[in-house]
Image (cartoon, rainbow over all chains, first blue to last red):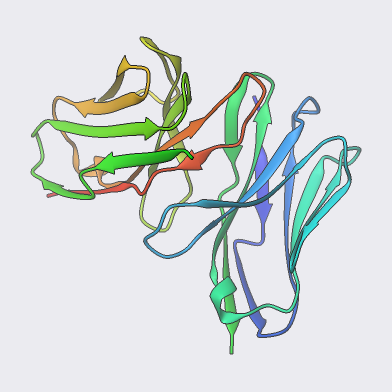
Length: 111
Length: 113
């Protein structure tokens, strides 16, 4: 089955700096890669996703890049703000199986 | 638009007591439904998923069970709770055979004492 590895597990950045979170996956058939943001005590929320027919997708300060050959994808947050502090999860499907999630990255943006 | 409800929002139960958590989705038909558990400070563990009424797939053997009595209703149950069942229980939905976009409900925080 699919295996998703996420790094780093914790990340601290100064406000205004960029943050990058990376995930690798094992199933070469995977074709959909979402990122979720979970604030403390809240539900995970889908913030951006990418499908395997594109290499990069951007939405304001958030972007996701995909390298199908290397089987990894990354979340990029630019000009970080304190409200970006949260736990971020990547995920990937494996064929007909539901999403497999990474273990999460706790991002702290220091003002 | 689609909305997903879970109740109760919080629950404190003694060890050995039964459990019933409910999830309903509005604004869509024939959704795929999922139950996840999240232990404190941990990741998302898929427990069950369902692609239709009466169709339940179990991902992790445990003392929990799931049922889907109606198209947009998903129930998580246990006959006897364990301390290790404490956590944040999240229901999620998606639609379509090829769509993996999952949207989560507000969750139920369960504490087993």
